[in-house]
Image (cartoon, rainbow, N blue to C red; front, side, top):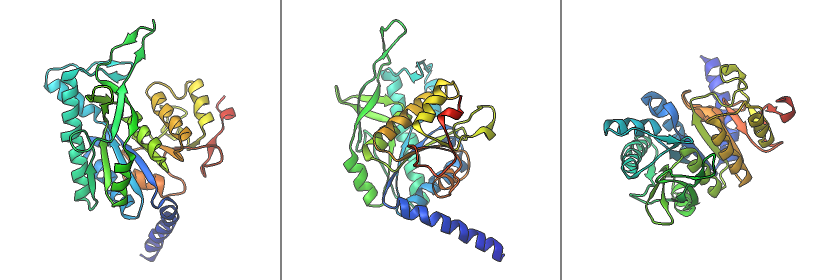
Length: 308
C-alpha cells in the first residue's frame, strides 16, 4: 500500500515541475479523429482539459467534426465530395457543417467540460466568432483555379476574447468555422489549420494535435517505430524521404508554420489513449511526437542526417 502511495506521490512531483513551467501559458488542443466518437475516451480527454485549467494552465480547444458531418450529409441525401483533401462545401453542405459543428460537437464539448467540473464557453458565429478568414484558392495540375465552394483559411483571430476567457478560468471551445472578411458569410475551415492559426496568434506554449496515430512513425505499420522528438529540419527530411506523406503532410506543415510564428512546441499524440494529454504534457517521456526547434526538446531527437 505504501509503495503504491509513494509511486503516486512521485508522479505528482514529476507533474509539479511542468505545472509551474506552463502556468498561465496557452495550450491549443486540436480535438478530432475517433476520440470524438468514443464517449469514454472523450470523457478522459475532457477531464484532462479540466485538470489543466484547474492547475493554472490556459487550454483552448479547437475542433472539427468530419465523421459527424459526413453522416449528417448522408442522412440528408447528400454525397460528400472532397477535392485535394478538402470537403467541397456548397451552401447546402455549409448549412449541415454549421449545424453539426455548432449545435452538435461544440455544444456537447462545452456541456461535458462543465459537467466534469470545469467552465467552458462556446465561441462560434452564432455566439462570438473569433476566427476570420478568406476563401481558399487552389490550383489544379493545369494551374486552373479549383472551386471549393465555401472553404476558407483563417487569416485573423480575435485573441483578446480568447485571452479574457482564459484569464477568467474559462476554457474557450471553437469549431473550425470562420467569418469571411470579404462577404461576412461562413467558411468551412480545415480544423488542423484553424488550430494552428489560433496557436500562432496566441503565441501559445504548445499546440497539441489529437490523432488516431501514436505520433509520427518511421514505419506507419509499426507503432513501435514512434519518433519521440523532431526538429523542423528533421520533419522536412522525413517529408523528402516519403516517411511523412499523404494526410500527415498538411498537419506537419501547420506545425512548422506555428513554430516559425512563435509557438514553442508542437505535439502529435494518440487521442485514443486514456489521459493522453496529461501523459504528454506532465511527464518527462511523453507518449507521442514532440516537434521543437533544435536544442529545445528534452526527448531523443531524430536528426535529419539519420533519416537518410
